[in-house]
Amino acid sequence: MQEAKGGPRTRIADSEVRVMQEAFGVCETMMRCFESGARELKVHSVFDRAMNFSSDCGMITLLSPDRCLMPFSVLLREFADFRALSRGRSFRIDKSGIAVDGRTEIGFETAVRTDLHLPETAFSGAFEKQPALDALRSFLKDHTDRGLTELVFDGRQSVYARFLAPRLERLRQAAKESDESLIAAAYDVAGCGEGLTPSSDDLLCGYLLCASLARGRDAAQKAAYRASQRTNDISASLLRRAGDGLFSQDALSLIDCLSRGGPAGETQAAIARVAAFGSSSGCDFLTGLYFGILDFTKGKEAM
Image (tube, rainbow, N blue to C red):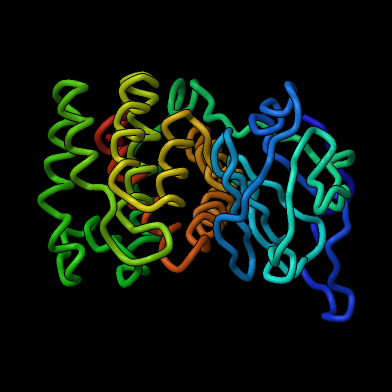
């Protein structure tokens, strides 16, 4: 993996905000899509810290430097005014960068190219299951007001938790049965909850991560793609990438830490970084990951 000096800038004066810059990081799988040539981009949605494009290779996202690299994303080195950038312009992407109105304004030459695939060896070998569950449960106990985390503690106070609790139970039961049962149950869970990506979709991503390791990529991919048909475009893209085994850099760092039984401080810091994503998306992902580890992994149990 290519190393880069320094890191993305996390603060910049308003007077310094500009578009033309070199990206800090790019998704390696996304870059392979451009080996056959450039792709046209169409603005899909714009936010303060992110900008989504539609393309014939799926959704591609520009991220501000205070975010973590995600599948099919470009992490900028400096902040940019995405709303101003999106107005009345044409966009094109290739292996050299993103061109705006025919001129390359976000270059990829010095960007770190990162493989965001989930390692097939995660949660294997010397993995100890109970410490991982305890670490997640301990963190989520202090965040039971975020998304669907209350379900870890059998809580059903929110309207979404009450609605999804029986569906989650069916999903967990289906995981013990056939691939067809898992696919159908995942579809029933999708598209529910508050947030830009509904909470249940983030939970599914965490759960299917473990399913793919235990049951094979095919079943998890089919479940993710089927579930993606029942939610919004942004969430659907997230689910499909998860089905393909692609996850955010922060999520992969957490999986690595849990898999090798990292020190308590490192583990808690990795969990907190994932939890910081979105209003509840990170905690919802952690909730799904908790149930996924509980249901699918075969690590050593505590005596």
